[in-house]
Each structure stands twice: as C-alpha cells, then as structure tokens.
Image 1 (spheres, rainbow, N blue to C red):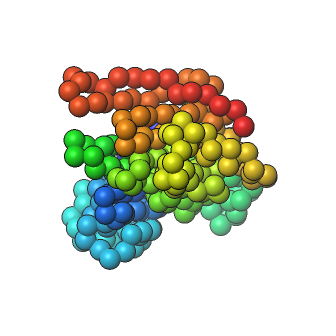
Image 2 (image 1 turned 90 degrees about the vertical axis):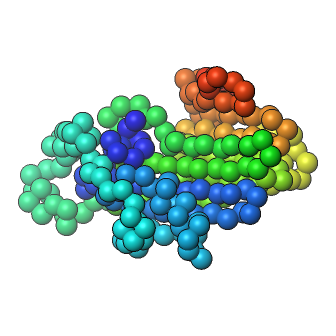
Length: 265
C-alpha cells in the first residue's frame, strides 16, 4: 500500500506523516491525529484519543508525545521503495543551488497537486454497521506524496473525511481531501439522510454541493456511504471507473469487490 502507513509516500522533505480518525456513531465520540511520524498504527492512536482524552484531535509533536505515553508501536515508516522514489524526484526537480540550502531554500514552488510516482490507491476507510445496528467509521492515510509538511487532508477531519451516526448512516471519503474539507462532504451525506433523503439521493446531493466549487484543487474524490437499511453506495467523482471497494456482510465468508459508480463534475 503506497498511501497508508508504513510504506506510504513521503512529504516534500522525505518524511512520512500519517493521519487517522475514528468515530463512534452511537455516542458521536471521535478521535483523530494528524502529521504523526514514527508510529505504525495511527488509527489506534486516534482511538486512544477518543477513549482516553477529553480532546478529539491531536497533531504533530503533541500526537507523538501522546502515542509514546500510551505505548503505541513505533516504526520506521519510510521504506526503501518510497525513499528511492522521493530521491528520484529530488534529483530531478531540485536545482544544485537549491540543494546547497535545502530545505531552507523554500518549498512552495515545488508543491504541485497530484504529482505521483504511480497511481495512488487512496486513503483506507472503513464504515461499518454491526448486528445491533451500531455504526462507526475509521480512516487512515499518509496523504499526498511530496505534500507540504504539516498538510492535513480530509482523513483526520470529522465531518469532512468521515462521519458516523447510528441513527442515520455513515460516510467516508478518499482522494482529493481538500474537496471534502471545502464541502463538509461526510457530514453533509449524513445530514441529507437525516432530512429523509434516500442513500442514493444523499450522495447525489453531496456531489451537487461540489459543483459549486470554484478555483483551488478540483480532482478525483470517492464518496463511500451506508445507511441504516443495509444500503450502500460509492461514487468516484471525476473517477475513471477503475475505483473499487469491498463490502462484507454478516454471514458471508469473505468480502465482495464492487466497482465504484463514476460521476463527472
């Protein structure tokens, strides 16, 4: 996996920064972490934030301090394939003059949207409903390759990258998180469900919200959603039809693979 956790792509400084979140749809309790380095399972740290702190969101050195305090598993997350890919980018894009003062020479000009060594797999998201009807969500990512240090996408932001409410349903997103942040996509889908929309219409309304965006980065984003009636829908906004997701129902021996529905903005 190139975009989640250990083995994920580095930021523009060659560091792997991880983001994650969890939400309990019954209590509406949440936990999230962002820009975490040196730990193997950021989603477990996010869960501990939810369960052990009065806060819901920790970032950077604070999140890492908390991870050490709870004994979270450490790891070197920059693996050789990712280090080599970053080095190849660095050698090709950074001039000798800039290298002499790197990284104080400035980063802004080198941060470009969706520059990638290969097609990314996207954020890992789980939305689930158990036998009792309780709904929860979990997300994890290492974000964009060569991103500006400290960049947070939608993954750790409750209401943008994920939202769960046992009364209505859940939603989680992958892809260009900036789009979900601007539109509050995950929360919007659940609110449309609350207002009586079908799951199909709730997701469609969230896509329509995105059509109002002007400027900034507008690219590919996938919206995953479930409701309380065992319905599910996943749409790949500006996707090419190659996007897939897995559905695992109680009693089935394994998850089944499904194609996402492509929709163009």
